[in-house]
Length: 93
Image (tube, rainbow, N blue to C red; front, side):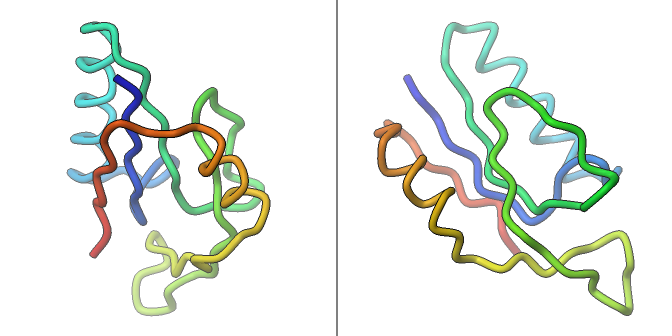
């Protein structure tokens, strides 16, 4: 299956949600599934990663490790439309 996780918590942040997504992705990949992730862009702290699409985001002032994602991005939307996912899991607050 082709699976999509949509999340507002992902690397380089370190927390339980990020850990859960990483562990679940690895197990699903081990079982033969393809896993894509849509996550916030952390600017210069973001490292390119296979099957991870990044959305522009801004810092959430009370918690600088968290980001407000700008939910619309024409480039990401086009890529998602072309991928045809079997399962979409939303991990948003």
